[in-house]
Image (tube, rainbow, N blue to C red; front, top):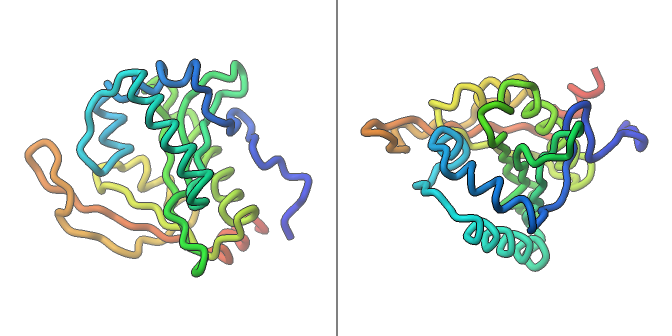
Amino acid sequence: MLDIQTQLFEAKDVRFGPIDHETHPEVESKWTHDAEFMRLMELKPVRPLSPAMVKKQYEAIEKEMEEDKNLFYFTIRAREDDRLIGKAVVEWIDWANGNGYVRLGIGAAEDRRKGYGSQALGMLLRYAFGELNLYRVTAVVPAYNEGALRLFQKFGFVEEVRRRKALHRDGGFWDIVAFGLLNAEWREQTAA
């Protein structure tokens, strides 16, 4: 049974929030200049973005959220000072079958490996399964992103598909791994 008192948008050290069009474009623009972050976060070719370009992306995200209703985008903020540290997304929702994709990233290198990603993924799953009532979620990760592989496995995700040598990066080819987690599996874990 889901506890109605459970805080939906807050964890121990992080909280979810909306996009702030004044301060966030500058912060996220800096992340796009970090090749490591971009290659961990994106499967498509990456490039640095100006704050104005990031702001345009935010506008497109908000329009899609409002019109298509199959994207839920959250900023991840540190609770201690409310600064932007990452983003968490439930996207490509197929409402007829209760399927969605989850994605998240912690932007600045100094904010990684502090447990923020685990806390954010816990909240994102609670939202996807408890609030949106999805039947299953999928996470797609490049095989070189060992931190993400461990994170999704820690939360009970099961490797379902491995597309061999499907991603070209730095002169080499990497597998792309798709993980799945069912609502019932998530509920079983949270009840334990």
